[in-house]
Amino acid sequence: MIQTIVLPDLSETQRASHRLDVYRGDLENRIAPGNKFHKLRYHLKEAEKLGAIHIATFGGAYSNHLHAFSKTVVNAGFAPLIIVRGELQIGLTPTLRDCADDGAVLFSTDRDDYRLGLESRVKNEVEQEYANVYWIAEGGGGELGVLGCRDWADSISAFSAGSDGASVTRLGSSNNQPYDTWCVASGTGTTAVGLACSNAVKRLQVFNALKGAEGIENTIEALTHDFIRTYDGISAQDVFSKMAFWHSRNCGRFGGLPDEIAEFLRALYVMNPELRLDPVYTGKLVYNIWRKIKENRWRFRSALIIHTGGLQGWRGVKRERIPYPEFL
Ligand SMILES: Cc1ncc(COP(=O)(O)O)c(C=O)c1O
Image 1 (tube, rainbow, N blue to C red):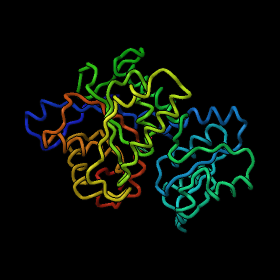
Image 2 (tube, protein in one colour; image 1 turned 90 degrees about the vertical axis):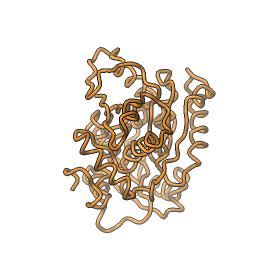
Image 3 (cartoon, rainbow, N blue to C red; image 1 turned 45 degrees about the vertical axis):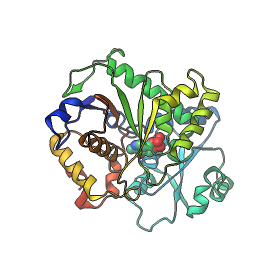
Image 4 (cartoon, rainbow, N blue to C red; image 1 turned 120 degrees about the horizontal axis):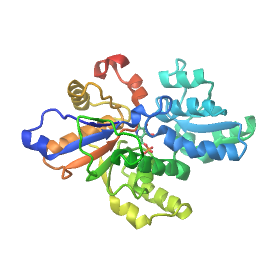
């Protein structure tokens, strides 16, 4: 489904000058909504090809990736292993509780070792205990994650144009003109690179959701080169020329939700009662676009935001900041 977002507190001119639609990726896959299934798809195929029994990955205590990972891996017939950043608390977070309930085995390691990822000490320890482990980097990243997201962009584009044979459900908009730009939030940058590597995407605004992670542009550049080396179809120059980077204002600490964004999401919910955004990625993305429109610094007449899911993340936010009754 594609939905037009009604933004609060804009002038008539601002409202008439900018259309903001959202592709509701959050409604796509119940256990791995948004970008999650797309990032995992090709990893599952590779794990099967290699005869893996276990699939292991890394993530934080509220990670959307971990939440989708354990369910998806179990559904595909593998056993999930998870390395959690930092100490495991005695009472697990709701995210990790769900992972454990799905059957995932949890390991923890200190932040310095965790940062080493596939080179970490804990990875070696896991491999001594378990045979036939297939590893997925934090956030479901890497080239195979990019490949899944490139396919996703192709299918969103076909859906949006009505050329995939399915009828497009549009809420609030009957317009099917191509968009001036697409917009996506980034963490590892995998989704952004995948979308930008699709010939269906002409322009992409990448909103960095992580505080102080300005290095994302370098990460995205490296990932693009790695991907293009293996999968052709587009040049690195074409990919980079499509992308523009926005370092989100007012991110707060990772997972934190500053007052003004919480208030914005509440107002947005009143005007769009059927739309849910997440607190870390899509909520901050829409907030930042809204600020730019208000300040007359948003030049695109029409934009398609890709909803990357993450609603389970509300379980890590203080009650008084949650706009949606079902998460209270
Ligand atoms: C809801 C949501 N949106 C966006 C992202 C960012 O995706 P990526 O790590 O591919 O940049 C994530 C992280 O995985 C996420 O959980």
